[in-house]
Structures are given as structure tokens and as C-alpha cells.
Image 1 (cartoon, rainbow, N blue to C red):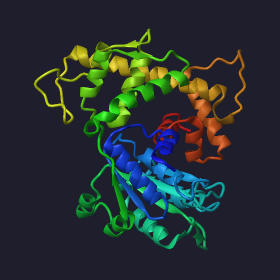
Image 2 (spheres, one colour; image 1 turned 30 degrees about the horizontal axis):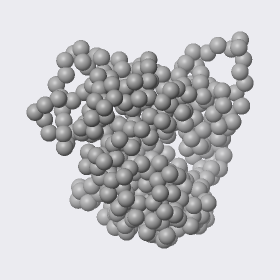
Image 3 (cartoon, rainbow, N blue to C red; image 1 turned 90 degrees about the vertical axis):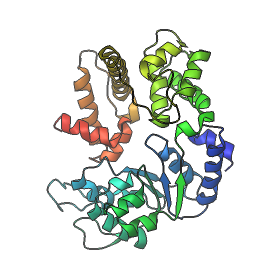
Image 4 (cartoon, rainbow, N blue to C red; image 1 turned 180 degrees about the vertical axis):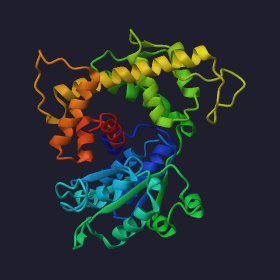
Length: 362
């Protein structure tokens, strides 16, 4: 698979030398089953590169299972990874496969690996080395053929030194380490990312494609992006959602992502002192955007998302909260309690799903 094919298929957007060098590495490591550790600041797009590695490998036709180790509560992480037998603990109504089994013949991507508890790290190391594990409540081992990718935004060597991460697991995972540079160090990619996210958002929400003024693009180029690509994506989507016309100006982005106009280096994230009015205005912008996103997501879920088979009844009027609760209940029922699959059906992260389950007392 060529660089252009990878970029087009997996949304690896950018023309910088750093991006092209990363794609070269991906093509090289994808050919084998060697473990890869992906390092980068939060929001740089580590999962995008993990998906590219999997899809360029000989395992591409088999599943890629992504696990956010920081999103799953410690008490159930082992069950989520290795599965459990029926009756093995309170609430284990049915036997369930864990992520290791679901990834059999494919790739298991362990995101935020540094957040995994030490006790689980021990069992993970053994499973990686032997390609076998034991379900909770089982008496026999289960063998799998899985390739392992991991990602973190922390310096794992520092975590090892602080006794928060096992040294043997660290050495096992870092056979090949890929460093994804922050967005502020690859400014050449900003314009392409801006237009990519804008066009995608307009298409998904059936709105007109926005037009960016020259001043707006200059502003986005000079901004330090402490939240990296994720922050850029959110800024673009927020600006489109809150603008009545399709023209996006510098003033709009000054409200969403303000920063000092002079006397401050733009090479690193900066902390600004905002007036109460500025803080309130920014909060309102973000709250409105999140509310609109929630409504759109729930509407999509209830009407057509992932074959949930929700029938439209004009006499059945629900509040946004009730609609969200109903969608989660249906997704959990459809997935037979598998929260990973339910989260995918709903189009939300596992962390958000766990939070909503707790919030709705499900």
C-alpha cells in the first residue's frame, strides 16, 4: 500500500515531512507482527496510525480491536480483556469473550496503556508472550493469534522509574516505537487538516461547505494547538455549528480559541488570563456546541444508527435525556451487554458510555 493510498483510506492528512516519514515507517512495520508502541501527546491521532498499521498488514481482513485502558474501571478491566464464564462473579449472567478473543487473527490496540493497573499488567505480559490466557472462572487456557499495538502520551521510562509501569512489559511492547510529533511542530499540515475536517463535518451534517477568510487561516496557522489535531477538529466543527452563514472569520476563532496577539511565543502552549466575560462567553460557545452535538447524535441513533430498529412513533415524545437513556438501553440489549460493541453502535467512546450508564443508573 502506497503513502497516497494510506492517506486517502485512513484520513492521515498532511504533507509535512514528518507525516511522510511516519507513513514510511508504517509501511515497513506493517509487514511483520512485531509489537509497536505509539507515543505522542494527547490528541495527535495515535489511533489513526494504529489503524493504518493494521490495515496495511496481512491481518487487514481480520478485526482490529481498540481498547482504551484509561476508560474502563479497574474492577472490570480484567474481565473486559480476557472475558469470563457464566456465574464466575456476581452479574456474570452469560459467558462473554474478552478483547483478546475478539481480536483473534487480528490486531489488539491498547490505547492509554500507561493507565493500566500494575496487577493487570502482569497478566497482560504473560498473555502477550504466550499468546494464551484464562477467562475469569475458566479452568482451561485459551490460545489466540494476536498482534499487539499500544499507545501512550506518557514517558513510559519515567513511569517505570516511578514503579507505576512494569519494566518487563515496557521492553516487550517497545520493539518498535513511533513518535508522532505535536501539531505545533508540523505547521505544514494545518491547512489540509482544516479543510479536511470542514468538508467532512459539512457532508455529515448536510450543511454548506464553509469558506475561511485569509485572516482566519493565518490565525489557525499561528495558534499553538496544545490539544493538537483533536483541538483543531473541535475548533473547526464548533465554528461551523455556531455560524449562521458559511463564512468563517478570524473573529469567530478568536472567540473559540483565544490567545495573546503579541509578545508571546507560539511554539508552545500558553496560559492566558481571561476576563470573567471572556470565560463566560467561551463556556457558552462550548456548551452550545456540545448540546447541538448531543441532539444530533441522539437523533441519528434513534432514527438509523447501526440497525437499532427504533420505530418512529409521533405520539411518543421524549426529552433529550430520555432519548439518550433509551438509546443506551437498546444498544446494550442489542450487544448483549458488551459495552465496547454498544459504544460503537452508539458512536460514542467507552468512557462516555460508562459515564452515561452511571448517570442513568442503568
